[in-house]
Length: 274
Image (cartoon, rainbow, N blue to C red; front, side, top):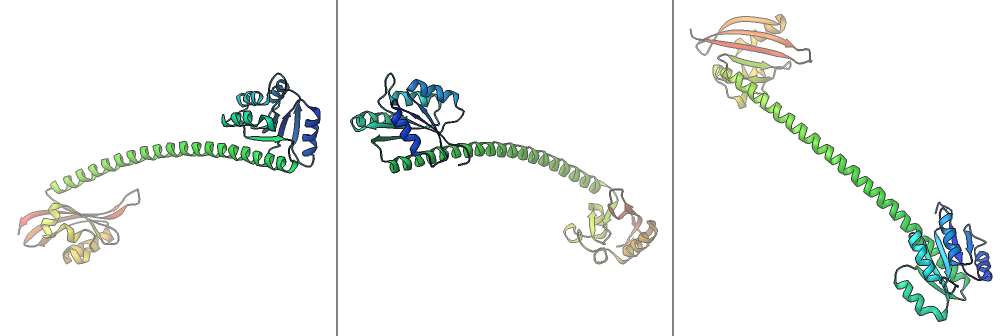
């Protein structure tokens, strides 16, 4: 336990209070004494932290059980113990059953038993306090987790919306390319074919599934690969070639975008049969 322990002892007999003080001389507990219930309640209100209250049962004006019920109202987190003679056992048991009193200790008490009970009562107190702290931390963590989840859901929704827009743009871009009356082929710097519109597939009688991601040398006619080699050196090119019995005008450019994107773009205009 990290905090100082204060124990409030209430009894109308000074000898009992002195005995309790002597009992805890070898501990670090701070023993606070009062000779009546009213005095005990005043001390309880004026003392910042009291973990344990020990009260005699038979006291004038306010008996111990009534006193501890008031203690419960003021400081419900305190642990409350009653000292009493054997004749009062039935009344004390009834009070304990009400849930307001932690333990009943008969008079005269055994010092070792009383010290053990006090130790267990303080362990009970600090366990409850630790659980309260842990519960508060858990609630805070859960609240933070909910906030994070909410933010993540929002980000996912936003990202999903962005991806849907991007997909629509890509689909629209591909549809536009496919609608062009010329063939368009895109090749990355490593020589892989990364784009080919419908007209380009038709011109070279290729299948989209077999050309995208393929090496240009393996997929395109030798004449086109020769033009690409020339294009890499000159950066732009315009030429006329024959392909599959048709006359093609080929225009090409080596793209080097400011974003760092590089590659070759070829445009094929099929002029019909030679």
